[in-house]
Image 1 (spheres, rainbow, N blue to C red):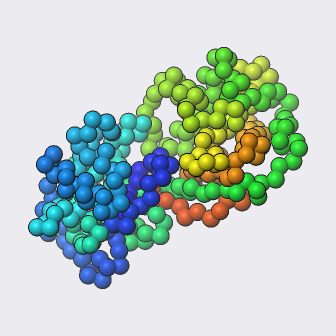
Image 2 (image 1 turned 180 degrees about the vertical axis):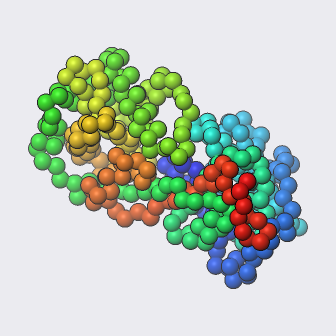
Image 3 (image 1 turned 120 degrees about the vertical axis):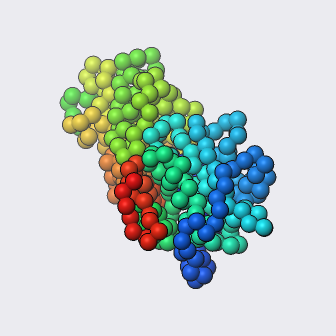
Length: 352
């Protein structure tokens, strides 16, 4: 099983087949007491076996999380369980610079063994090594046994992330929607991000609006308090369609009241719906900027759009009802809060 942290799902890394919650493991009744498998800290001499193990689990992209890499997260720890046949399980615990307060966990078991005692032993060490910090894991909704496993270790659901696709042939816009007709007298300017270049007040206002929207959607795991200059880079990202991303400005043209961004998709002829947000009291303007980016997608030959939608994002979540997206199974983020509960030998829980 891959347990992907937030904002990595957009990289297209699906959970692997080597998760510890298969029916095979349950039939073997391997919910044994922790401590029956010895866990050791990853060392450089373990690299070859660890890379092979991650490959067996379909998680080659997670090699970068092994300690000792030149590039990667700020903090990386790895723990392994070995047997005579090699590595039976590996846990990757790491810190993300953009969300520094918690730690992220990726846990894998060898596909041909699926010993849940290994998973339990790894989890005991991971919780101790987290140092009282929160821990997050991510898995698919249909992995019901993962829900049971992590719940027993004090985790609870924090967020659901949907990654649906939309066939643009099913989207019909009126002429007024395509033009972005204003519905409020106090908003006289609808501009693409490209048209904002040179307007420092508007660009700073856009960065502030992006920061406020993102922080609101991630209150459970707040981002680093970066300066506004960092948030401005998101409105100038390489994968952004600046001509297809739109902002609603006030009458003076120096304050962003609402915005909706559009990004390059992973496939040809595909775009991705990005962040959106609005000043309190101006939420109705989201309809204009959202329809404008959709009109841009239709006019520029895109066949479909994708989106990454968290149910904690009050703006993005409305898109699921607004457009006929294809059904998409959600990814569940489970979080063990700092100072949360810890599993005891008897299966009961106690406070840290």
